[in-house]
Amino acid sequence: MEKTVAWCVWITGLPGSGKSVVSNALLNLLEQRNVHAYLLSSDALRKVLTPKPVYSQEERDMVYNTIVYFASILVKNNVNVIIDGTGNLRRYRDSARACISRFMEVYLQCPIDVCIEREFKREKLYHAPAHIYAKALSGESSNVPGVGAPYEPPLNPEVILDAVTETPESAAEKILNALIVRGWIS
Image (cartoon, rainbow, N blue to C red; front, side, top):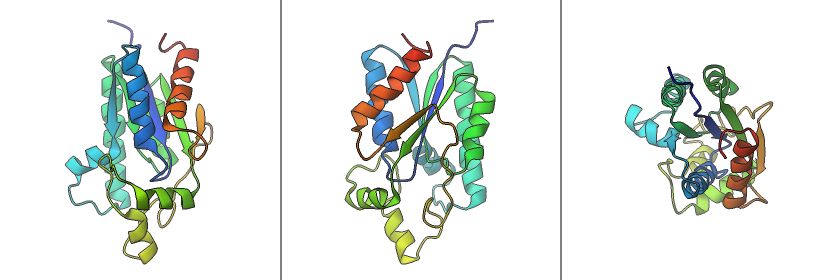
């Protein structure tokens, strides 16, 4: 049996921190190097699993357990994976780390006020729901990570990125360099 050499990068951060933009920038950099990776978007998967989401804890558990399951299967079949997902609880990301040997957690650090401002100005949604912070701030929704629901930042991420000062391209470069340093790509 062939040894698994694929890897998984989970880009986590608050909604509106830029996870999707950075994930797509990383995907582009990898394509330029002829490195194939599959982008697993929590928002895209949610549209299939829960077309009318309520963002309950049970629903989040189902979505993130499914993401970890798909990511682990893909990696076992030598497909590199980028997870674009808030994964608001550490246990989701820890679950991926426990079952994927080549796992890297990337924390896109961004203050909540910047995330809110970005969300109001967002033109491209990348499958994300619209106006989540407006709904949270008006009291219409109590399930937004960082506002009504908890967001547990990673304790020991392999890469920490400043979403305010770094461009998506420079953030993607840092992730790419971390993959190279680990010997996961050349």
